[in-house]
Image 1 (spheres, rainbow, N blue to C red):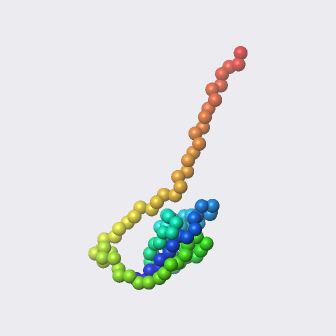
Image 2: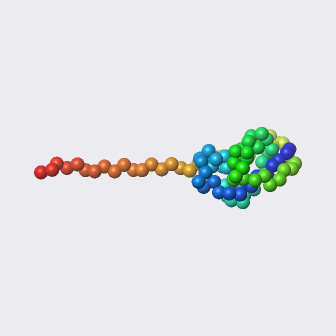
Length: 98
């Protein structure tokens, strides 16, 4: 199976939200983090979308995972994006003026 190593070199702070989501979609959460991903058009397209943030460190082949051969797969829950907070509405007590 062909793989590609992707490294997060620059912070996505200040980037548009869709670029931040692309970084998270690649599984990169920390600076200088390297992930080995399956070399597919999807991964290549995601890397091409954010070339100013990531770099391809290397490509290669590796043996298939024994868990996948047995029919077992490990499913990781995707991390949720930045939680949106809502401001609490404050009400002012209206009293009768005398």
